[in-house]
View 1 (spheres, one colour):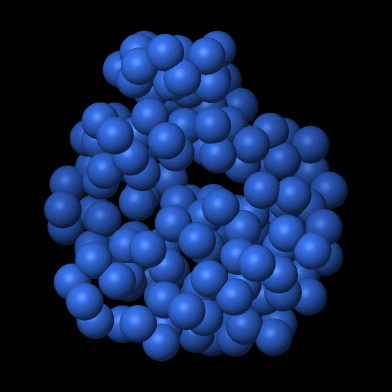
View 2 (cartoon, one colour):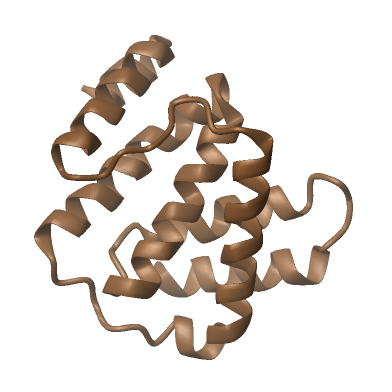
Length: 143
């Protein structure tokens, strides 16, 4: 339903349904995360990625927890509608996907989150090298 609502431009319904589904899976995200919350989450992710390093991240084991896999997949479907209607939530979701990937292993869609954060890092025209490293991580998950 998230995908269908999103493709026909019913972004708010896609977001509501996606957040409700995620909640049923045990994850509760703020529908309207504050700028401060986004800043903190993004800072934490950047620190985690630096600590792990690109080489280690691309060699993560596969995510085996079916519930976590479902959550990450749900977040992937939520990304486009949130990016159109609520970009702060899209950033928050991408950060959460990276946290889940680092903690539980790589999901088939983990690369989406790294690509999204790489794009976010270039919005101010800075952090290009860091953004490229996120893009490379994203590409490695597609292999």
